[in-house]
Amino acid sequence: MAEASVRNARIRDEGTRNLVDAAKAAGAKRLIAQSIAWVYAPGSEPHAETDPLDSGAEGGRAISVGGVVALEKHVLGASPMTGIVLRYGHLYGPGTGAEAAAAPAVHVDAAAYAALVAVERGEQGAFNVAEPNGHITTDKAVSELGWRAGFRLAA
Image 1 (cartoon, helix red, strand yellow):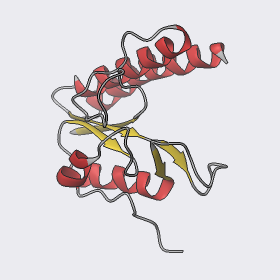
Image 2 (cartoon, helix red, strand yellow):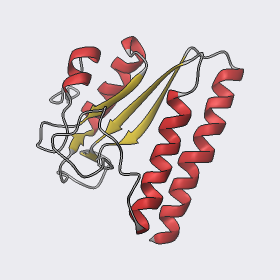
Image 3 (cartoon, one colour):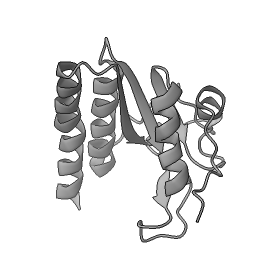
Image 4 (cartoon, helix red, strand yellow):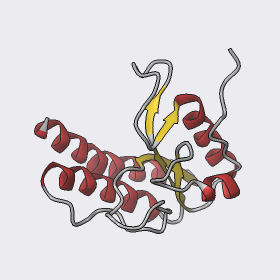
């Protein structure tokens, strides 16, 4: 498990840096990246996007948080492109192997919808994307992107 965390953090850092470079070379105007919504530093909840990430974490969590911090730094610092980070909750629904997830959670349809509205009208910054819960607030995604936690694709 520890080795997987190291590889994941490396992908978030080096892989995202490579994607940013490729997007710039291609002349992209906007870059949207998936991040996670459960790496906030301990503190008052619910966490908003302006709350600090848990950079003081220890052990395996420190490795994961470090990868997330690197990913978000690369994307949000990708000027002149507009960098958008979607901090997803735990994914559940078709194709995930889970019909429910621990909070913060987000259904795969609602997660895909967040990516769509970010492409259509997202501005620079990070957005929490999860169902209503006491851990994070999604007010920014709702108000600025028009995102809806209850979005589901028609069957």
